[in-house]
Structures are given as C-alpha cells and as structure tokens.
Amino acid sequence: MGMTEITRFAPSPTGHLHLGHVASALAGWRAAMESGGTFLLRVEDIDTTRCRPEFIADLYTDLEWLGLSWPRPVRRQSAHMDDYRRVLDTLAGRGLLYPCFCTRRDIMEAAGAPHHAPDGAMVYPGTCRNMDAGRRAALLAAGVPYALRLDMARALGLPGARRLTWHEVGEGAQPCQPELFGDVVLARKDVPASYHLCVTHDDALQGVSLVTRGQDLRAATALHRLLQHIMGWPAPRYRHHPLLCDATGRRLAKRDGALSVRAMRMAGMTPQQVCNAAGAPDHISAVSSAVGSH
Image (cartoon, rainbow, N blue to C red; front, top):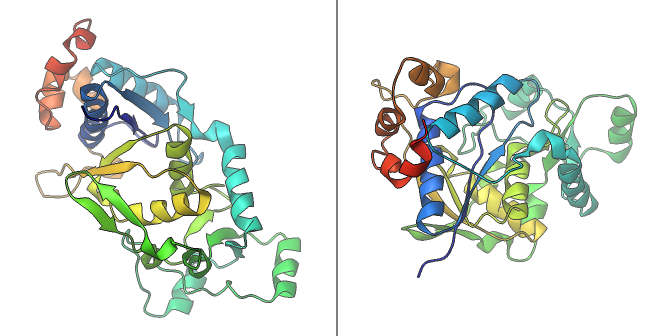
C-alpha cells in the first residue's frame, strides 16, 4: 500500500488559467485521489502589483468546472505576510541575510559578463555582501530601497548543506547545487517575500508530501531544499512534469496570451475536451461524479 499523498496546486493569479495550468492541477489532483489523500488549492498572490481579485474568482470557477474540489478555506499568501516575515527575521538573526541596495543596472555593470542561474536570472556578483557596517547603516537610515539576499556561502557552510538531495519520483535521489543561484533575493520592497521562501514555508506548513509542478521549476528544487534544510522543514517528494507547448514549440504562458480555460469554456468546450487538450483524457472518468453536475 502506497503512502497517502497531500498535494497542491498553487497558481499565481496574474492572468487566466491556461492548459498548462490544467495539466499541473490534474497531476496533483490525480496523485492525491489515487492514494486516498488530499488535494489542496493555494493562491500565491504575494505580488500585489500583478495579482488581481478577478483572476482568483475565475480560477475557482475554472477548476470547479473541471470537476476538482479542495478543502476550504484556501490559503492566500497575501493574508499571511507575518508568517514570511518571521522566517526572514529568523534567517537575519542567524546572519544568513543581508540588505542589497543595487539596482538592476548596478548588477549588470558590476557583473560585466554576467553568469546566469538555472532559472535564467543573473547571478548576483556580491557587491553589497561585505559592505562596511557604517555605510550600510547610513543607507538604511536614508531610506534607500533594498532587497534582502541569502548569503549563499554562509548557508552552504551549515552542517549538511553541501550534501543535500531531493527525491524525484521515478528517478530517486537528485543532487542539489543551490550555489548555482548565488545570493538569491528572498524579499524586496515591492514583493516583501519571494516565491522561493513562500512556497517552501507553505509546503511545510500544509504538510505537502508530494509536489507536482512543471519541469521549468526542477532546477529551483535545489534552492528549496536548502531553505528546508536551514529552517528544519520536512522535505516533500517531487514530480516535475513536462511543459505543454504551442504549435511552435514555445511553452504556454499567460504573458504570451495562451488560450485560457475561461475562453474555452465560454466557447462551448466541455470539461472532457479541455482535459483531452491538456493531455489528461481519463481525468473526467476519474471524477465523473464531480463533473456530472456541470
């Protein structure tokens, strides 16, 4: 008998759900249902400049129309900023964070020929890491905007930090190389807690045992494992699924205007047809009782 899984689908409401989201949601749903477990919905709306209430309402409608259900209340990250602040305070108290006053232009100029992390972001050259304490205090007192960065070298100096692995379903233990991300930003003025920090905190808090998500986030798992290790959070297992692409081979994304579930629903497509298009043709039979009312 396999373990009972707690899985989650955690979209950021910056646009309407598309088929890539459907594939991801169904992967988590099926893993939970097949094990007699629990499927959670989480709304990752920390970025209040881009997230909109109407997108949250629409994602509920879309998922219910597809036959998915989940326990209430849904965790909305924007309502739990104190939780993330406590984590940041803990990291700061252990000397693992430092304020960075660099602008993007500063970073590009300092880096010269910049290195890029596995997620495509520029690796920070460390300009503010060893800043004189007096200058740092003066900049803070002057109200100069800053980000909070993880001191990667210090974090990797913690016992066991350089021997971390994660468990990928079907593949086993995978080596972690969080150092490839450099001193990542964990908070900044416009987004007071980063995706990396919030997602690892919430997976631990909600007891998620299996994280199902797209292949584009596979490399970031090394960074998430480091944060779990630092904070003493449990490590879930992971299953990274292939990304859905359009006819040109480009992955579906909200910013590219990928055809939305809402548009397909309003055009008269059935839940079965949408699931077929998302590569999950047997989803509907698995939840026929939930879909039957639509």
